Image (cartoon, rainbow over all chains, first blue to last red; front, side):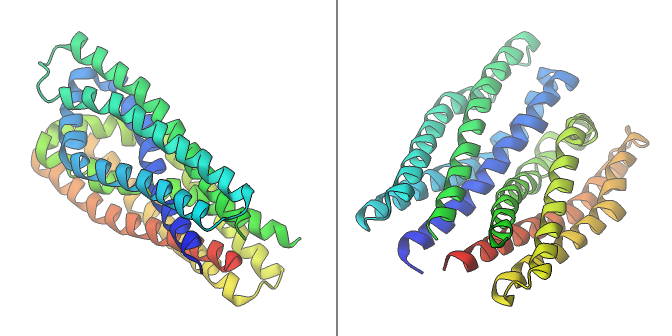
Length: 155
Length: 158
């Protein structure tokens, strides 16, 4: 197995886990705020996103983006086929856009730590967070699928 | 015909990745949050998600991935796929069946019990501790299944 293929395999695995984590947050966790109220959800978010999430998300998020960029870089240096290079470049672009969306989403979540338990205030922040999170979840799932596709065509 | 198995492995791998990530999120981020926010508040959240929004997302994801993994193993068997390719698919299918049994027999009936003891912090703690143990096993299986599908995938590439 060559180095590009090994990196691509690891990048796909990490990106897959991050995609699952993102989709779960977008489809299961965040919609719950409509049922229990924004303040109750913020209490959960302070234990979840501002708990172990402070370690897990940066590790997976930064790790996935770095691995994707690194794989693409090595693929270019190894002069892989154009098809693989194109898919990896697109995955890198989406991964970087995901990072960009995270730089907009993360401060909103972090600010909940000090936000008073005011339903309207917290609700507005969570709505904005949900907007950015939906975008980054979509980008991350697409990046993961592109990496799976790249693995398939690298046969 | 040989392409069918590859397409199945690819789609199964993609879905297993999503399932493993979602499962890890429950184990590593969501469940430990109850120690920070308190059991009663966590129970309110859990009833809104595990007994609410999750019912729309988890069954199609879980059943879809299980069926794909089983279909992949059956097609590999019917096509007499070489054991070097088929072994991880067979193992993934077995792991999914074990996962399904744990989910149906133990994990699924556990969380609804919180509705009957909504005001009892001690009993809620027992329920979530029990669920956490089951979820740890399920998350480990989910990650193992994802690794097995990647192994199957890699066996076709290398």
